[in-house]
Amino acid sequence: MNYLLVFVGGGLGAGARYWLQGAVYRLSGPGFPYGTFVVNVLGSLAIGVLITAFEERFAVDPGIRIFLIVGILGGCTTFSSFSYETLALLREGSIGTGLLNVASTVVTCLGATWLGMILGELI
Image (cartoon, rainbow, N blue to C red; front, side, top):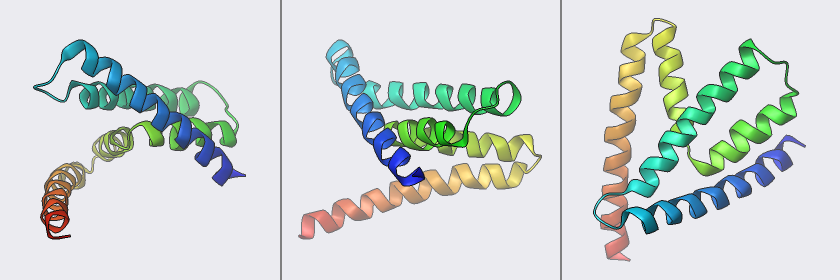
């Protein structure tokens, strides 16, 4: 059942990302990836609100949590998960691990994208 919740939520989240990015790009024009920026910021805000509310204020069925956080927000932006996990490490006092997560994720993902672009040109 959890896979179905993630599947449906992920589809809704991806659709929301596509719509919101398009709306922002129509308003802002080219030059800076404002659409992606806005989606990542709003997704990060939403995961912060939801996880904190679910852990500290409201008892929520695990299925709802999976649908909203893993499904919808995961489909909309994985940057929200990255942001939350990094801040959780920092709040727990794992400063080095949190900073390592930021540096290694950014550098490795940029490197992987660069390598993918090179491989894509060879195909």
